[in-house]
Length: 332
Image (cartoon, rainbow, N blue to C red):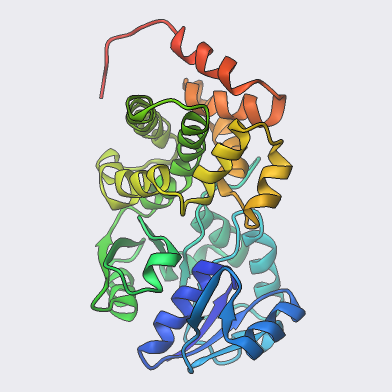
């Protein structure tokens, strides 16, 4: 199969190599011409040293070249960049093959999940050709062939099964799921809670605090999920609780580490620069709060993270405010 892979971050590099190792011809596209040349020369990602791309991976910064003859398009850009990238795809004549979305986020102002953004850009007729991959998966572990399980979701059950077959390996297990919105929503929202957990650890709080943040964070995600018509049970699975755990508990998580840097006193922009990659939770936080305010749903953790990042509230004061909230009966 000829595969066009959009986005050469660590996840894109990792999955492109995985797909290529199964005999597929993969063209990995990046908008940065110099980075494409570097990857072609070294065949290593600077954030994943010592791991060479499979021989079946080629690199380009020419989107037209990447799309030519593609039988499958996979994207791993950013939630902010997904619309402009697919607008470029449409301008080049659109694509007729399936599209797999692996980025996680909610578009600001529109409140659209990333599969919804692609449908809006490419047209309603593309809806049944769009699939979403999400779940607890660090590129740093997958590229080492460490056992990983995630979810593939689509509006079309047959496409989900097809994508499961294309991506599955002995170490990369994929479960099909029919709740595309739930899978996409869980993957987006967990990044906000991971920032909160990073801040908590950075302030020196304990496991008790983090467990409370994760549990109440999952409750917050479930409450807000009704705005996107998600199935609540989806959020108890790999794309919800599973992804929440791996993102909140691991130092490989850029959202978690971003939170720690914020707790240490760095401003949001400085913390993102130190991480060296996009921190999706900082972007999604604004989108989620917009959704919550429109639906009049209380999301105290998301609100606290927004106030810390965009209004300069001291993290310790945010914690105090959360602890001083009126106590209500626990509803799950």
